Length: 521
Image (cartoon, rainbow, N blue to C red; front, side, top):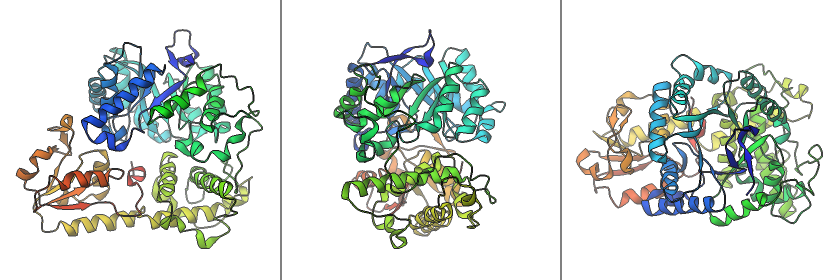
């Protein structure tokens, strides 16, 4: 394993260049104590292999990632560093951030958090909310003064321009950016600016959320070695001296071993293509994020939308390369909605990136096809056509405001005669849905449940969370499952425990994609 001084500071912690992201544990393993123990064993294995940097958030891995890490840390004497998080999506002020921090310390079984991130800042407006009096920054800075946090950092989901503005404020000791071999060129100015200020740079999505190894033919030419593409891609990015840690989600020991190969020797890339020469082999033009298309006359964040659409191009180009096909969805209009019958996972990943790029969803419905942006685009991208594709795909997957409202009205209808309704699980996803729903009358007859013993009795939306053992005495006549990834597993679990008179209702249907990533903040 190769190590670097965090932030290239002489007094910076010596961290493993490869960091362990905790979002990709096997979802089935997070559902019970035995499975979570297997996840902890995987963490212990990574520690034995030399990884000492672990990135976590309260909602990762069905809300159990912090507990999994804490259990693993009890079985090692090695030094480990943790990057944990608060953010506007889960905490609204400094007081809530402090309570979140204390809960994280308890679950992680640590006396302090090494790197505490204000998470998922999408734009400068959100930064102002973070910095307001009594806000998250103030609460975190106070905790740092008290020794509960070593380094205060920020996770950026904004564009390059806003990232550079944030760096100039000299508020944070480290940043996390989404950088990999697909998009690193646009982030070079941010990395240079951070290095000048001795601000540590950590990369998330270092393998493109799995896109790079999954569609390896597009990236084989990053260097001429015979290493797996995941190794090539990590090694290439590790050669940037400005980057302290590259995060990767590693669900198995085999993937841990493979990723470590990129850091098992000096990370000078002997056979690498020069950084200004490497190009990805794709069928359509990728948006570079230059921003010349902006501003939009109706306020659409065009560059962010187009960079999310890049993911579609990458996936389909790789499939064509592997099959020898010549398909171009922009040329074959009859296939534009094949995504509904085909790869739902692709749609979900595209719209996850739409949200991560800071796009508030209703913006997608504003395009008037004036094509002013296309006349300014230096790459001659058919922007309006791609915007229409995003709108159509969203409608096909129940991802529009009206589609969500129709689904929630159906829940109301199914529960119309119920005096009490159960909601499972009591978690941030359900809370966001209720905020969007804005139906106090329905919410007033809801009870909230969670299988985690740590959640029992905790306050949630003005109620106390109940355990599975309390279903029968709660008087609920229907149980609504509000979870996207684990809906099937949760339903199987509940079918064994619900009384016969309690109806089981699923929020999501076949063809849906994850609402969580489009909820309005």
